[in-house]
Picture (cartoon, each protein chain N blue to C red):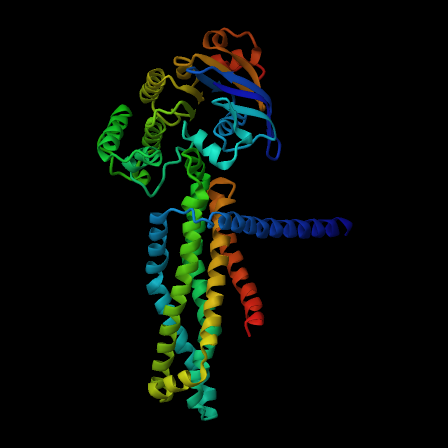
Length: 244
Length: 260
């Protein structure tokens, strides 16, 4: 379970304002909202990359903002994350990038690593790309390698920041379906930020909407689709006229 | 007028604040790295990779720079050497200047341009593309895995390259002394060995280690502190090169004063 309680975070201006959110274990939670609403910052707080000025973020029952470096690393070993910019390591091949989290978690059997890497690459339709470097891939291919790396360890908590950005509609739907399948097989708790609302809502259990650093809606996917909140309604249905 | 004065004071304040932020940031980075050295927590393969690419690949450029520097010193000193018939002092003059000052400074500036700038660009790119964040989410400490091997490699390799550059600069000076002034290489090396003390060489090498630290901390700090996406990477590289060069000269002044 992920528990976010009254979290505040500011840079030049406040980016998270009193955010309280609970993601039950095994839930695929979609986080939506317009640009600069604080979604990516909230994900980074969940991963322990940013510490909130106030409030608490609890993962696996531990308040991660209070953990020391060693304890935080132990928590991170149970978390997977896909970044908005993919964050592939430029000096490593595609196969090495995907295998990286496995090696860092102590898996040394090369046959196991190779089989898992091949499986992940097949899942994202990039079989045969093992020896390519990230610099030689298109934006969509990089995104798919990022997805393969984020899912390779079957982490208990996985955070996805725009997993389908830059992908064509068919590949995008395939990626959402793949992530849903992975989440169900692993029983993982997933928080997924995406601007592709239509496809995102085909896989989520619950949805939260952020606006100007605040969580203005938290409910099931069906509730989000049927919400009468003017901002949520306009955003979910992509209406031009409205408060946004 | 009042507005202009206010603008000037505001600009001065911003500049001082920015300087304090960067010097403080580099100092904090140094402290965090020192904590990781006792006991040593660094990635061995990454250290070897950096020793190779920062040191071995710098050999050609440092070699060419050093050879020409030695030659240029003799050309500049040639007029005076001839006028005063002081050929016997050529080895002392070239050795003293090269080992204590010119060698460490020029090689450090070359190293800063080639290795320091590259280090900042790499780290800044990794920062803006969230690769540093990715390392953290994979439970990898970026300072131990990425930064400490680079800092150690830069300090060690600048030290080694300074020895290598000193030898080549003196060889260049001896060759030019023979070709231009007719001072035999035996006379050159005799003059050098009779007058140059081990401390002269040690002074230059201590300086080179300090310069290596300055370049490493400056280039790593600006790489990690980058903001503003791709344009920010360019600004970080520029700031790193300027800060390294300034730091080298400030450090040189202080070290020369202390190590006389």
